Amino acid sequence: MNARRASLLSSFTVLAVALGATLGFLLLAVFGGPDTQRLLLRIVAVSLIIFLCILFIRYFSLLWFAYLGHAERNVSRPRPLAELPPVSILVPAYNEGEVLDEALASLARLDYPVYEVVVVDDGSRDDTLAIAAAWEGTRGPAEFRVVTQPNAGKAAALNTGIRVSKHPYVFCMDADSQLEPRTLREAVRHMGDGSVGAVAGNVKVRNRGNLLARLQALEYIEGLNLPRRAQGFVAAVNIVPGPVGLFRREALEEVGFYDTDTFAEDADLTLKMMASGWKVVYEDRAVAWTDAPERWIDLAQQRYRWTRGILQTLRKRKGVLARPFPDFPLWISTLQMGFEAVLWPVLNIYAHLFFALIALLFGSGELILYWLVLLSLLDLVAALVTVSMEEESLGLIPLALVYRFVFVLFLDVVKALASLEEFFRLDMGWGKLDRSHAT
Image: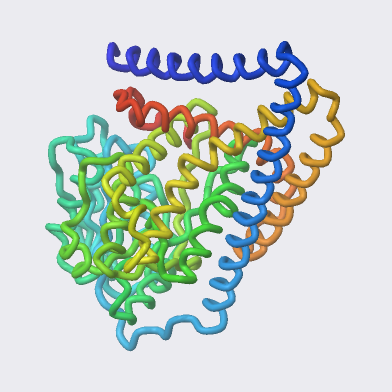
């Protein structure tokens, strides 16, 4: 509890510093002399143009490469393997008693000839181990096994599962996720290419009972899977998501499995595989359904952890950013990860806050109106394209009108604060998501 209070205090300190800097800028804009105000207006105008240029480039490059990847997969999909190889499915679980049974039931329904399911109990304090043990044995084509270990974290649990599993391909998922029946078949077909080390699947939000959950459903389609589609076109997906990822055992052994020194073990492992020369591809028909947080505080906790984990992963590879060659795919993937985690949130906050306030203070409200309309149209177009490619509910598209100015802005503030805390190496006080508010 003391550690949590200390972490919250440090978070509020960082927030107070950021707000103080903002207030100082605004006071300078309001009470400064005419020359100061003209200079600030020029800075805002130039910054707005730069921001809009970056925004257009980001949107249309992602949409273009995502479309190319989507078209390529539909026109020339990987040929089915002559014989489907056996697969080991790993399910790390820590205090997942409320959701584990449904996850394992989805695995029993998989359309696949031979596979094993290894549940790794990571020292749970609830009934996770008992629920997993009830599934042990052979169920159709699947063999269910359970191992347990003292609590050591998700990465360590996955490493334990890799060591005790026995098949040449390893599929990793989360204990709160459920797989579509054909997920394994769709992912494994990419392994016919011996240079592919991993396949990233398609994560979708299952619970859509309130506005926040539906916004996350749109975000997973537009904000997370859209970049994976674009990256998949060049076989350089930079994050194989935790709920749905297939790996070649040979590649895992070559890179030394998962590292335990970051909060984003999936991103860390993916970049390690790319650095070793393995291709990482995307398969949109390998689908896992996951539960999204339904409270804003739980969402902030989740994204805070994601952001700090990604920054820890990037810190381990800071030398890569200075060397675009000879491994250009790794360089561009690392650069894009850093841009999305740090630079883009800061730019977005700056644009919304400074541009709007400064323009309104100096009587340029119509400029802000045009700007808001433009961004709304961009989000609507992106939502329409991505929802169509995903064959998802068209009811998600109108949410794009509040997606950028409420949801994305909230997440960017969380990312910016998490980045500041990671920069100052402050302790993390947030832990596991409270399941009672996540389903």
